[in-house]
Length: 243
Image (tube, one colour):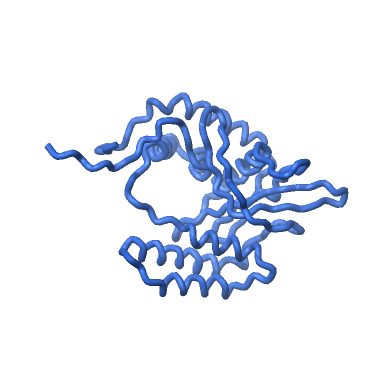
């Protein structure tokens, strides 16, 4: 009998992305189970990522004179780029779609006032309740108050083609950002600020700052992570998975 080709990679120790954690906190029980299954048994099949679009938009926000033309020109270059495979063609076209869509809604985006937009730097993983969590920061924010206190924040992008981000998911992700920055401060004396921790829905242009109950939400995420860690070994693989 021939060996079956592997379909999934087994993640032995508990870990989840910040994106999935936000989805998890707002999900139904069935949704939560599906998220954990996808986190523990990661599909080997190549998945289209939007890395180039996200990098282009991050640079757009950080430029001195951001122009929408920069986004549409970048999208056209992706569509015109030669591809070595059908998969690469899909990647280029999906990233171009991302850029073109955001160019249509960028005028809606409300960024925090009087905050400097900085490069994201390294997005180190943190451990909460026995679960490693990765944060995909797209930029950092910094402002100095009238009393010379340093306030910091960060931004992440969420995009689903043809679908708006659920406000509750955006709230959870921004609440995570506030807690995350509290544990990974890169500047001595700097204090994370809720209104500087934002999740941007790249499909609608809606901005979701960390809500006023973010401290409570973060505690709920800590409790959820403890439960995820305890449950990890018992998470069953998808039907017909080979790993």
